[in-house]
Image (cartoon, rainbow, N blue to C red; front, side, top):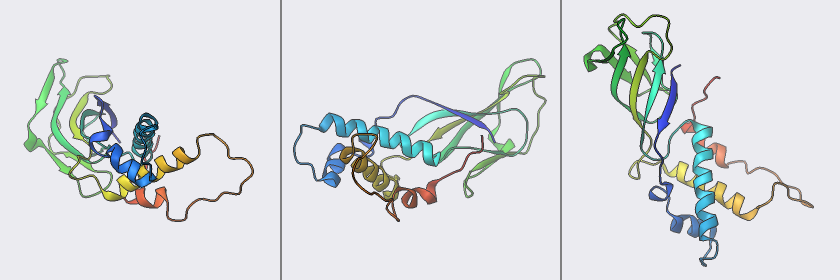
Length: 187
């Protein structure tokens, strides 16, 4: 599986507004607006970590070392270009006709139909430039709902421990909402 690193930051409020989170929490005052915004951002980051999906569009690079079919450990994604270091240590752009992208499976993958010679004895010789993440128009409702549930939990329980109560996990909670969007990435 390719290694992935994204660049840039995302303003999560453009995808899940503070107003919609406050509506979910049934909060009508403005006293906790900063806290609710921070909790929403933290919940989005948790969902990204749990699912390997990205909330909000950004660019990134998946790195590979050899010409084989590579699973891309993030979704959703679009391949913008593929570059590689040739035997002269020059970064070369591969023609789009020399690879195929499979977005049907999860994780999605890229298969190379051509295998030019690569720089010897180096890591990350192949750079798969990607645009990743859901936009406001294609963010699944289940992901937005999971973020709001998590914010609600953290807003209600602001300490690491709750004393004097018996608690249990909701049977159809956050994990159930996120299961269809999850990629399990082996370390």
